[in-house]
Amino acid sequence: MTEETILLVEDSDVLRQGLKSLLEQENYAVITGGNGKEALDEMEVMTPDLILADILMPEMDGYELFEAVRSKPEWISIPFIFLTARIERKHILAGKRLGAEDYLLKPISPEDLLTAIRSRLGRSQQLLLAQLHESYEASLIMLANAIEVRDPYTRGHVERVMNYAQTIAEYLGWTAIEINNLRFGSILHDIGKINIAENILHKEGPLSDEEWVEMRKHPEMGAELVKGIHYLVPALPVILYHHERWNGSGYPYGLKEEKIPVSARIVAIADSFDAMTTERPYRKELTPEQAFNEVVSGSGIQYDPLMVEAFQHAWETEKITEIFLAFP
Ligand SMILES: [Fe+2]
Ligand SMILES: [Fe+2]
Figure 1 (cartoon, rainbow, N blue to C red):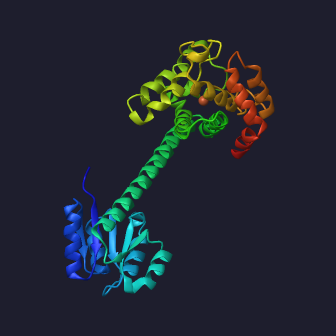
Figure 2 (tube, protein in one colour):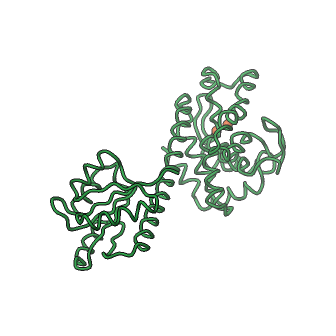
């Protein structure tokens, strides 16, 4: 791991030097400024991982520095700690109002200072990780939507399938991690269609036998696409097995019952329900009620009876209808 950089802003030379060497002993890289202005100059050169700033300083004080830092989008998440003397206690409140992550009273013990710094840095890393995760999901949805653009009749398909599947899993009491993997699987379930020829994907009518052979390759093609991406491996079961059927009549492997991964058994229901309720060029869509009845009558044939039961429960709570109506 690269060392973390702390920007130390303090007008007292003695204190600045003392704190600098303390932080360097702890293997932080330290850049310094004697007031807010100097600190901002430093930040133009290098973005610190954390800012530790005195409040009362000449030229530009700690508050002004804080405002300036927070006004720039790329600096908005840098942890900011105020250092303040006891005599400036009234300023603490002002600091809190500004939303400073923390304030420390001078004189401060080295232990307290280091603890505060470590905890702020840790928290901002967690935040970064959460943001990273969010952007992963957003880019996946973008990618999946790019495939849908090729097939205008399936607009919103990925998001709806994801939400239907999640509703079922929630009823089953799945953990956050399991649900998350299911979401990724749902987003990517048809990713293999990126390799399916335009004329098959857009065909205004039922597919011929040869065209079906092509179309049925999309689960394996999709699995091939994502299997090298460590982060997406949990999505594999859904991508590969979402067209398997409970009675073994599905594709690509004709797996039966519990041999089919449970996440794929859930997405199979979510996927069919959405396909049935969406208009295609060669057939009219079913109403949600009709599609729901189709799913129920496929229980034990096409779909896992337990998953159908969970779907029925979700239906009764009206969550399924809600999702259906959320995408006009
Ligand atoms: Fe599919
Ligand atoms: Fe699908």
